[in-house]
Length: 98
Image (cartoon, rainbow, N blue to C red; front, side, top):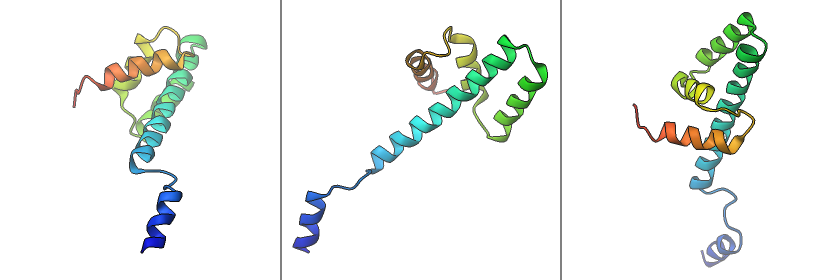
């Protein structure tokens, strides 16, 4: 038992539960940022209705939060700025709408 305790003191777990949750949230957020950037390109830059519709179908298929996407789509003025998008996303998520 002492050997096991010493091992874990010398070799902490690679990922704690908190770290795993932070990683999941970061990956989740990057998924939202990516889909928003795809929508900006399709809808606003290219004006491609078919591509826009396909991306929105993908949003539905993946059960992504449409409100969160619309918030980032229309409230963010610079979609390449991860920090600005993160700030706006945090504000939206803090609204506790659900």
